[in-house]
Image (cartoon, rainbow, N blue to C red; front, side, top):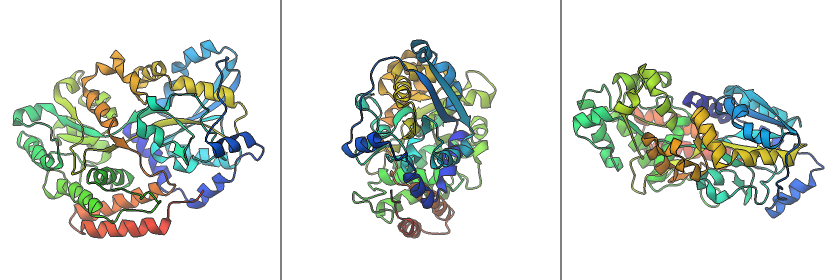
Length: 437
């Protein structure tokens, strides 16, 4: 999925009201005792290998799912008595329409979710627990699997994955004699070296001051040794680690390697191609888009390199994100629905999805396929995906992350201190709480 699509999908969750979350938690089908009992025990009845039958209604956000009808041709061939109907919804409307449908008891059988923003759905009144033995949970990137688990019950199965890494102009780095930094301390000097080699600014930083900035500083807080939520469910945002994270992010602007006025989001790739910026902290989708931005096939291979994120005092942890699938508690064809989800989780299917849309697999073994393993610029993302954490699985995280992104602006522009920003977002988070199911 493109970064633009991800922004649309995530932005709409940032303003989710707690009251809506609570209403969803009470809207499950009252006669679905099996799902409720399964959630209570942490188990669900296994799904057999017999052919799927009937109709499966699938809702997904436009983007990666656009090619699914083609990708699942093998599933349809192996299950001739099943009909799979896809409803693709614009990203900016997806969660809103899904929530409304669930609240009305008119949701699909299978729905797409986003591991970084699905916490409000992880409830037995909304989703069925993943059946025993349906998939090998250890075969997925751990943080992606964990994002679908609530109270030791798994509700979603990962579909595709992404995380952030450092993408930079290899030609300018070679000219400067600079290597990608391994630690925070080396980041600004590296970016200054790229500027010295001819770039307007070393880093094309995100200046939206929104949820995406909040996600950035959250991963920097992890790298500084902090946490976002304590083991007993209390916000831990007003900490020295969070202050260090805010200062690290601000250092890009105060040092002059990033411009607080641009590029805007839609300009980030053209700026990078034109040399107005020389690096991005971003996701793997850009790899397949830069040739288009440059209007020259092969430009990316000769001008771009990738590297895992520079490590802070406690390491180089990033966040995991992507897509996942869940079967609604109200599904009238749950067995067939889970068989489709099982098919979508297979390495071969995820490789086919990569070939059709460049979505990176959530199943680790799929990365061994030559179609993916042979792409050198993806190696840094694989390395980084093995060193990721999931954002807090609480219903108010999106709102907290959005506030955190806004607080970052004052620090980056020298209008407030990191300590003040950390205290402010802590107070805001405490006023929201973590949501109640």
